[in-house]
Length: 171
Image (cartoon, rainbow, N blue to C red):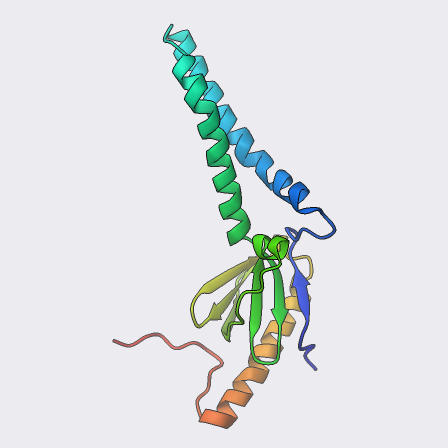
């Protein structure tokens, strides 16, 4: 029997971490990358005996702004939770979890497994879950497949169509 209402968490889930700490942790790598880029640029300009003032005045705030934007985008795009309900799934990003946002449920049309990832076909998008990011991946895949099979049987009984595999669009 499939555990409907099950919740799975990725390794990026900000469990038990204050909001600021989770954001700070995610900001470290982008900020280091942006500051390293600025440092290399400043070094090259210094070795060429060119003025550095404008690069310091504009470069440092720009590096920080780019890192903040990069971090916010990454947190909005990276999945942290997957909730299974009777006939839908809800995918929440790190940003959603931190802000308490609950995205609308999506109908799962198909599940495809590759050697190190699982692809979820929804009506509006394709989501890829990497094995290394989801600690309970074997249980998650089994639950998703059972969930998809259960939903496919319901669709077959109500409409007469087999929805177990998404069909390619015809045009």
